[in-house]
Image 1 (cartoon, helix red, strand yellow):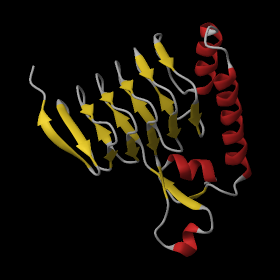
Image 2 (cartoon, one colour; image 1 turned 180 degrees about the vertical axis):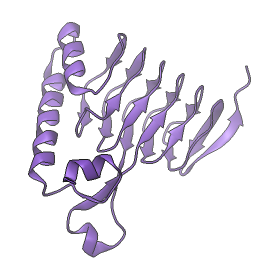
Image 3 (cartoon, helix red, strand yellow; image 1 turned 90 degrees about the vertical axis):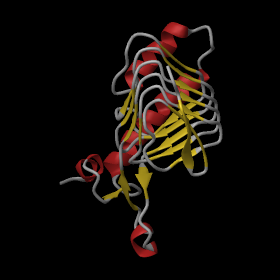
Image 4 (cartoon, one colour; image 1 turned 180 degrees about the horizontal axis):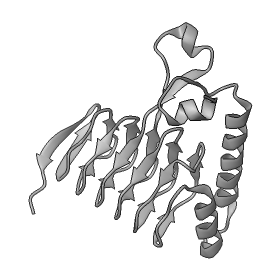
Length: 186
């Protein structure tokens, strides 16, 4: 099994020294750089670049620059996706967003996790765990979501939250670590 296959299967893999993965990251980061440098009125060019970068898109979406992704092909966005400025998605594992997801500025979604053992970590080895976000989810600004997390439908994540565990549907959740504050009725 090569390093990419290990990465995609949630196994310990070489993120730092595998030439193929480095080349894939450079390719994605180059496309992200081009996207970030486009003038705001070039909406068609921006849409086309996003379709090149991401694994799956629907028809209506807007990602305000700058964006920063590792691979791109592991990111899927639903219909009416919106992200404000400075979206960071480290995507060695799948990151999936449902429909009508709104993301505030400076939000980050991190699928990689590094071993606690320093000797293993110093070899450039890591794991990656998927993130799944349901539909009708709103993230306030400066939210961080860690790998292995699922966030349910119709949920609001408060600004500045660090989401380390699953969050159910139909709730408001906030804090560090992020916890459910109240149910959303209706």
